[in-house]
Length: 378
Image (tube, rainbow, N blue to C red; front, side, top):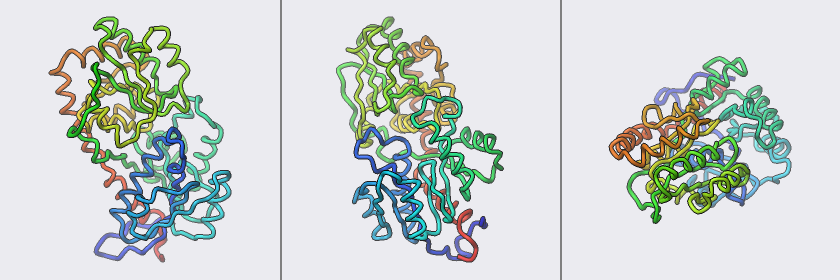
């Protein structure tokens, strides 16, 4: 089933119907949309610009945004399926009915199907940290996807190595494409204006993001530098870490730590631009898109030593021991008081952020469709 890539100019690529799991864009509750939704939206947006050749079937369990569909200029159909049984039952039935040439499994899961699968696996952190909703389902879906996919795509070198080791895969069986940063994330534009200078966290407010340690480090910082600073937490509180509220009460920080909850993507750049720094000492991470977005906005970043985050920032960020609140507090102090060092990180971050492009991501995915999933006789 695997075939060599078809070089432009040598042979015209066949016109395909590509089916795409767009379920991550379906929830009406915005708090349920996470990183997979961001990848799905930006990949489809770039494919609409890049690929004027193929047709798309976008499977979801609620109607997709008409603006997104219009970008395909009539080459995309949105199939709205029931939410209950979406993956196991309805996707299976409609893949058999629609008979696309390739299925893009964007949600780290795929139904039983004869359609060649290009599978996306973002990380395997749940094998190490078991504090995940529906852990058994996540493990089963991932293992089934790895077994049945024609080829796999992941988003960091760390995840690629983990995949190859865990499932005894050859390096050529897994492609690595970094997610991108949308054009809106730049230093130019409005800033979120607050009466106090602030540090920022962006991401889900769940246990693996290590927010209680950020709060403890922030407490040590304000104890030394005064209570003229805020810590702003932006992100879904759907799986809220209960330790966050405990820490806020313990250190009497409810007046200084502002939980904004979900903020639309279009409003995130102003939060980044106005911050002293983004703080992201996660325990686990597949990539760390907010870190890349912050660097693109000219905001310094403080990250943990988790390999994926180190990979994303390279030399452009300040790295701390994620289990050491005192070290986090010292990093906050350094960026709040040493503007020369802060500006150095701003410049390094802007340069590093240029590595992350949704156009390159989408182009890589489309090339893999033809390279690994399309038979020679199509």
